[in-house]
Image (cartoon, rainbow, N blue to C red; front, side, top):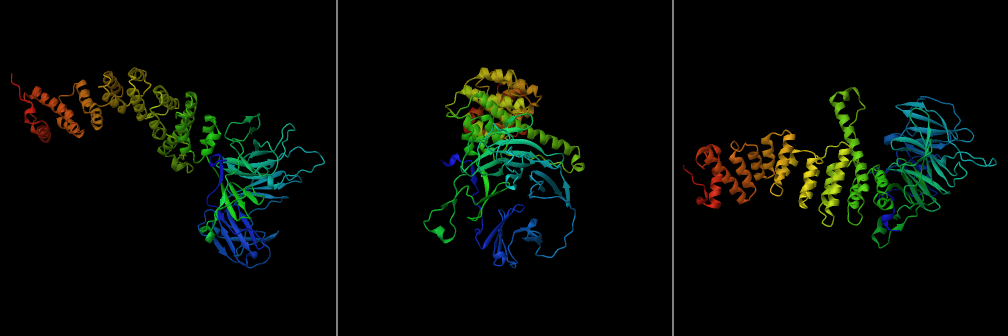
Length: 609
């Protein structure tokens, strides 16, 4: 299997620690994501390492017996060590204050540091869970709920195991994940993962069921809002996305794996120290090893090999494994690092080899613009709230975060469409249809179309002499009015004479100031178009000769300069009876340039009547 087929991988730079052995005990703190390697009960040293720690923490402590658990408080300020089932020792003397107590029989507990929620297992079957929520030094009791155990013969004693429960935040909401090894319905085979939504207020509710269609030993991770289920027997993993459409039965939504099961990408253990200099090749890591321990959300630890990895999702291989472009877009738009992959998918569907149909292309554009519009609306609401002074009264008001799923018009133009229109092998009707489809989609979501997209359409039409189509698009306002677009039309007059009138009509609709239009045209070196425009509205007797001669000279087109110079000589003759420029017009340098290029004899002679 090539590297392009694996959609899960272990991070390149794992946290490395001393392997677990009879002398060295290894512990993991889920809150700080730190690994503790404790040698000889701490007497010969404790080394603490975390994914973000540049420098490991090392210290020694007296060996007062076997260490059962060891953790730092947040920011590594206080160390707590547990050596017996009923005592926790803080090496530094501190006073502790009892804030609140609850009498409850507890079988086991689970804590989620990201959401500050603890779950306590109660009752004989261990399946009634009591959550508590910690916030700012207070502890709140949330409604307890029952986990439905699978159906089993009466002779079998079932209870809920801590191993089959996980807590994780998915799409910003806290879920309790229950790995049910047998379905509750007799006609369904295989295990399933049941997701219970645990809100801050209100009762816990069963929301999703992930169908695994197999039995055996499983482990769960959550990566980039995807539930990853590892299967030890087959040494493969599958991913589920609860945002994708599933089968809703009126109560819960059933989901199947997004993709076929695949192994995590093979991992080579890098050689360290002097051995790395020799010709020894890196050692392949045993994936799905029985010594692997999985922690939420995305951590895998191999205590026997001395590694802590973060699990990662690779998006590029998924593009080939998910042929339905609409579903692929739904999937990619929810991922954190999706932008360049989505742009690549868009370019690919417009390539000769993988060309998609127009309805598929339309679906993809609509999905992109749906996200784009959501962001624009949120940004507008925020701006209006700030302008209305609500930011002072509402401290929770936050500027919307622009995620990678927001692909604006400049992204699509720069990375997809501008390269697409240059492809000579593409039928021009298809090229124009794709451009118009993108513009249609923007209009559908009431997003103002940027002028450069209209320019791209017009240039493509002109390139293929499709002037009748251009006329229709303008006549029926398929292309929205804008000043840059009107200026582009003015510049097309020599190819397509009606473009001049189409442009003037557009400028009238825009109520544009005439001198502003002239400035825009001159800035684009459209000197003749500017002159034609000003003559068309009858303002040519009042314009500055120097401004036009400056612009003509900048084009470095001597014949254009000659034409403009001659026009103003004729104007001078008509208005003043002499072709010469007056000192107030400041055209001396242009007269000198004209003589230098064309000679004195080319100057216009005064005509007398």
